[in-house]
Image (cartoon, rainbow, N blue to C red; front, side, top):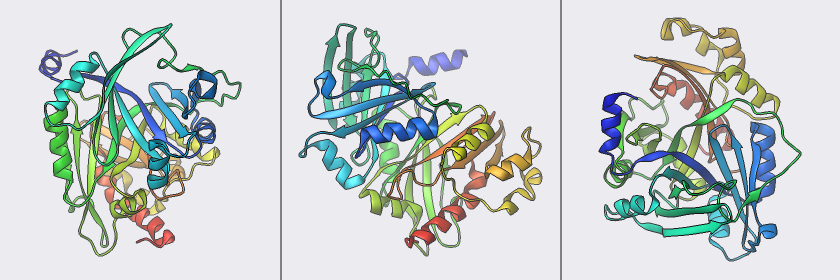
Length: 372
């Protein structure tokens, strides 16, 4: 690790080691787990429910490399989980951070103005103990601080290993590259300041409506990163346009701010995307004319352009290299959450050169849905 990186981490009042897990509140956790295992190659890790003594909710934990999803549903009618599902549909409730000290993380954020979700609590079983705490961020989304250095169990106390003979092959997903949140009109700067002031994040990129727009729709976006660069949160808000933007559509159907998409990294995007298509995942359509002047726009790339064209993969370059990316259609019934698959070949940016093509593809889907 470089000296300046060590210094940056030393002065970081909220050291975040990475994303521990992402929890979705869903209508049917068992079927959701089956979907993510089948379509995206996740493997079974842990389970909590009636068989473990939890009579209020059920959770299936699935994993692929450094990516861990928790899929949770409610057994009971009157519950926060059900309320969240009825309002938002399937969606991300928790983005949990792995930290060295959960109590300190909670105290540092609360004294800087965070709204408390969960005061620090220690939970134990025969495998040790964890400490978790949490705060609210935009909408009803929550950040938990997970301290697990004294725990040797499969996931968290209260969970057991989920042994399942159904285990499709992984598709090459490695880690969460970034998580994108959509917020309301004129709220982007409010939440960027929240991440800066409350969690110690830094703004690393900014896009305005001149960067991200078409003839009809536009949005504004800023990218916030924690001190060590392991957690990146782009935050979007709508911008004025002739028609309803993708952000407005999301806010309408999600009924408020929330996580718009997860960007999942791979080392071989062609292989990953090809397999996802074979397993039934649908992607936004990019016209083949996008590839006609590709080399003139991005320079030399190592990948076969015809395979990129066949799979609809976008390419962009910055001063550090290039990246390849593609976006699924919404993964649920509402036009809300979707996934981005990304492969970085040195680039540290977010595909600014692809915004036009991406927006046109999204508008085509909006037009099909009658929401543009």
